[in-house]
Image (cartoon, rainbow, N blue to C red):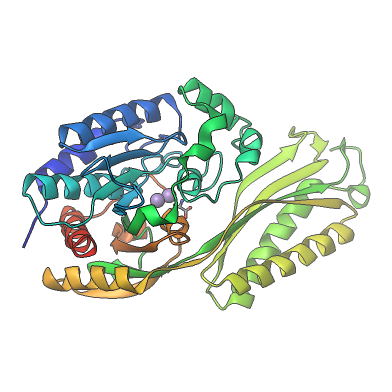
Length: 412
Ligand code: HGY
Ligand code: MN
Ligand code: MN
């Protein structure tokens, strides 16, 4: 059975981890940052050194292919990949594993002259983590990006996408040219760490992903009034932060209770204005995120949360401004790709289990234009989006070899 070169895969993972490496471990490599652009240049060099064709599209996605005709309408490609941008203080495998293992598979296929009737390509999708726009690069590729909105896209710290793209040498006005039509892609499969505890706790080495959650993010700003923190009687205060805090706790309880555990919720961005200790906060601003594998559930929960926000605001004598930020749709994975993963795992003598992804992924965009799927390897302790994210070397090698077997099946 065909095998990848695990030494080469480990070397590339080690080298990629250097770009944006943090002193205490982990990595911060946001899309378009100087460290990201150095990583991009390194990746293009590795793709070429592997004997593959390499190019970067106008949206900033990097590609490697067994032949340059990939994505031509009459030569639909089998596509794999993931992302090399990271969250702040993130791990070295989230995204990187799928890109480096995909590159290794294509390298092994070319090097060992393994049979494939279709061209194969690997992608590094830009800004999967959504610093400027959720799943940005794969949305542009799949024609899901509203390019008119590109000038408005900015990070929570205010840095604008158009500025960082220009700094990196890209023309934001050309992002729409990255779109590829659906005839050009035959199927897509992505290897990723699970980023949760289920595979490890079940003792199963390979996860066959059946669906990927939708994610809804909304900015809520509770507006009261600034007052002196010492002299204002407590019953007269109209505190924007306390309203945001009450909403955050009650929204969490509502989502857990109403979804029976099938949805999750998080408030990861909190801003208080004016934000000094001797002023009662006029404004409390949060970004509230909810995730569920079921589109109807997400919609119902959002309606309940919006009503909750209005109740809390009324009771606390403040107003609330609700602005949707982003919404990705849940995606079902293609049965043909799921079967290819399961067959490749079986041939490798590996047990599998089917599960849904509680993390969002570029695969959910590819699922709108082709047969798309994912395979997971266990995350140690379920840890991810933190510097001690880790998967066992043998899990990484198994995942890459199952990816190779899957790609050979899909491109036969
Ligand atoms: O947030 C997510 O689900 C993914 O890691 N971007
Ligand atoms: Mn991530
Ligand atoms: Mn990821």
